[in-house]
Image (cartoon, rainbow, N blue to C red; front, side, top):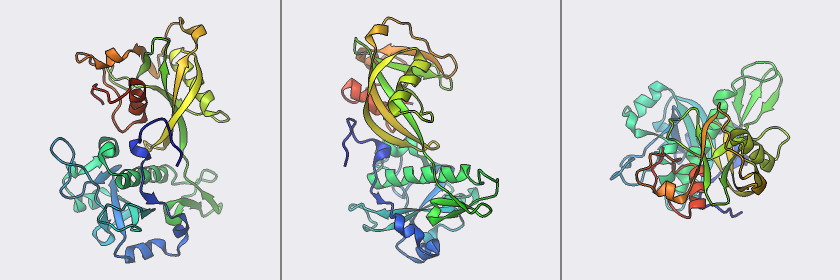
Length: 323
């Protein structure tokens, strides 16, 4: 497997064979529901259900997601076949087929009325094992695509899920519509004094800072997008972005491609110029700034590639609180 310069990223982990050939099985979900070994990952409002005996927070132990027999999850609104488990240290044997299932409010309440048992991926990703992290990330990515692509982009007709939920077909145009992922770049920018540049987004509280990021435009390479986005958001010119690694970010449908870059020495004296719309403030931070126990700056959470890139520059785990 290709090695990146970043440590294992929480949302890049997986222990699932996506088993794409099985998606063509006639009456796929009839076959899966009839198999007593099939397990269902219930999803409600982009949250997954914690397994009994596990929880979140100090003293709760390691969280684990509920993978339930199909008979225990009635009234599935939208099923998607995720694939076969590759995990060797789980109660489910290797080869167990897993289905993600979107539930209505009523079905979710009937399954587990305690809403605190339903958890957000960002909250638990870093603490889940590889199977759960991969399944949850895959489920959100494909289910979010379904929710935003219910109608044909050509004629507006309602589309129909096929092939285990990995295709939607327009019955009028007779065309297949496939899932899309939006590539985005995120970059750690370092100056001659080995400080890192962080920005505060207009949608955040003023003490929240993260790396600069943005979407890749049509006809643009990842490297070109990195240089453009950084300049647009901060006025900083960078040289030779170095690829570090990637991580899916299914909120709703991105692939975050991480880079590290240095400031162009010919423009190092230029002032910082946040764009004033998306980014309200940009600042250089030294390692001492991030270690200061009295600082109120909040940094990205442990599930994000932003956190991994900052800690790559920092040289280890950060002592600062997250958001």
